[in-house]
Image (cartoon, rainbow, N blue to C red; front, side):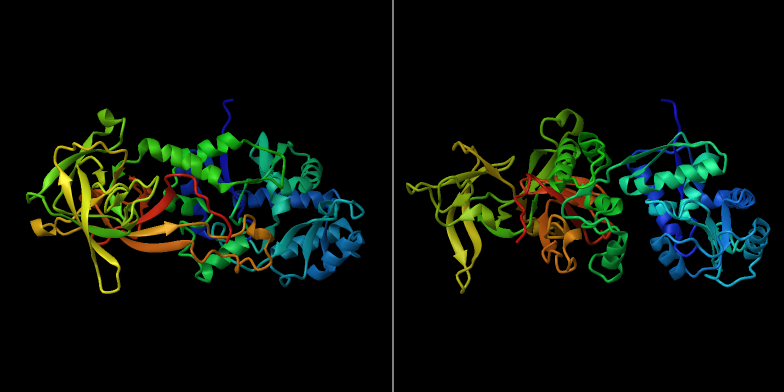
Length: 495
């Protein structure tokens, strides 16, 4: 429609303003693919807001109150007027000027709007417009010792910036009446206000207070912990802007407040996008050694697709194969069973069971090596260089190249699950007790050599396992990857 979007920050409370939050919001919004026209701050208009407050006093629509915060709350609940509500205009003007000059203690005086103390809407019961705070502001410095409230600032900033549409979530709907009252009382242009339902995801918390506790008390690694319901957390986990935006487009906007969207729908759209862009690699998370007894020796470079079906764009890679490889423990059973497609000592009728090493050869297990406790430590196998046996499936693998002078590459793999066990942890009294103790599991995996070339935030699909993202903790000698999502929708349930 040819409009412009302004990125405005409410910095009316100097006690809570931190540049890291501002920088984080700007970075996250830009990462999602959105570019604002300009960035503004509520504090840019402190001079204008002060003049409007003075004009409201002159119109007898605001007054200086000397009640304590506790008294104000009590009187508002009881719908009783402050004893200072009808003080003379000139007296309020003088007191407000003295507030600005720093002549009074914090909490001793406030400027309140003369609205309607009998209103059924609590937001119309003489809201506080200004309070005294002897705190240096990060942008305006020491110029002010009185600061406007959010309720006073938001609507007036909309008018001062000629905002056509002011969008907010439904919990602010109760403020629309006071929003309109203040703009009209100030004789300013009134923006159109639209409220919409907040997006609620299952197994997540949106309470800033609770999220801060998780971070400060060490329950998670930080604001960007891959389990956190923050954009920084989603980004570190490996979610893509396209996946998130496609999810938001799918669910749309609603006026309902109690609707919870299953987080697996978000994961579906992330998985769908990663499937289109994530190059394929091999990794073995639970390694079982396999020695191919008839291997002729040396290394054979196997050609493997970087992205099946899109080879023209993404090409191929070389994966080394030797006489010693590693497979997943789950890809072998001593006794074959129906509908099991992994390796076994033999088929049900006693024949060798051949399974394809993906992109390479068929192999069949001939013997099993166990330790003194009966745990399988190694498989002995043979390979068929001509792949004469037709197989219905294939398994992933990583070769041991140490005998050929190349160190086997390993990586730290962080496997993430839901941070909370309950679908709606906000309704759980002991919400910390609802934390999932298995939300992060760390394993050491053997990975193919090309993983060494990945950079922080690169995405890959470890074939047959899931999608992963290179974590910022990665260093030259230590690779760390976070599981973004499994290959298929999980059957995760509260346990």
